[in-house]
Image (cartoon, rainbow, N blue to C red; front, side, top):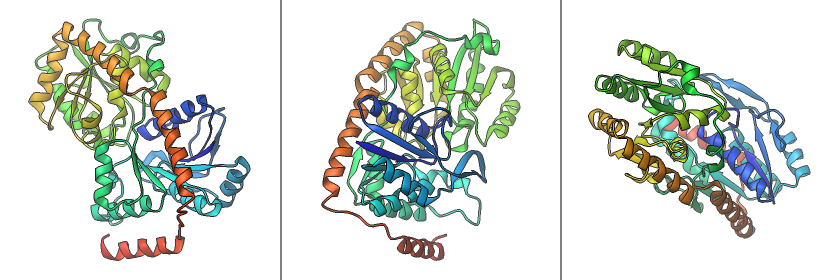
Length: 403
């Protein structure tokens, strides 16, 4: 099968969508499928990837807004004999996927990776849409496709509440377990001059508002008042970096916080494997791949059990969860792990086994391949049409009514 993946983000960018697309591409290819990725960001020398035109996103320079040339993508997709289209965002490349599906008469599957209602703050006033507008748009886009993939059952329920009628499959992104079993490449303590006596609290992800990093930093400041030899490492970059550094200074913990900035994915694994506990407090995740990656590396997790995180983790199995954003409780969970080596060792083993049994990338890629085959077969009976004129009329209506 020839699969065309349309995405606005791809490696070397570091985010959940880019990671998901890259992993599924690699594992589907291991199964014998042919996967082609179209994106404004692609790595050097990776076969099956095609770069489309793009501009830096005005409000976040780490991202690109794809400006694809439709006839070139159409010509290339025809040459590659694409059998199924898989889009990974309902934006520039998502629209390309809709048009391509109509022009070539191909089935179109869309993965709803991101809870878009929680990301409206990236669009400044007066252009920022209301939550209702985002829900209506998400429903329109998903209903224009032949099938939708939701990373968790909760996201499926969310889409159903929007009025999505297209078939919805629940399929999380799996974990590349093999990547966490190779020999260590370097010491993170030596790299950042961290004492062997210090315990390391780790966060991996975008330095952005939706990750609830103010809470993480305040929790760490509180933790340090109870446990002196402790360091917080934040791996990642993002639009809130300056604000975060300012808060660290205000809380008087700057000398105990390491901000690595952007880091190649191949190096991030070392941080998972050499830290003592992973802290995560985002309440907007559709899945939260990083918490599963931490478990795969044998790193115990303390997290807020909201949205996708609540779906993928089981309290007590490699992790300690709290029901809400509660500072004292969160800090107590961190202390429980850091001060109890036997518990930490047990959680490490349990977490690795849990990921291996339930979240292997081999299993998820096989399930995705089955979804492709099922949708290709069923879509022949009900070919959906994408009407660009009705789309622009729809946006105009939303603009007048709810923006």
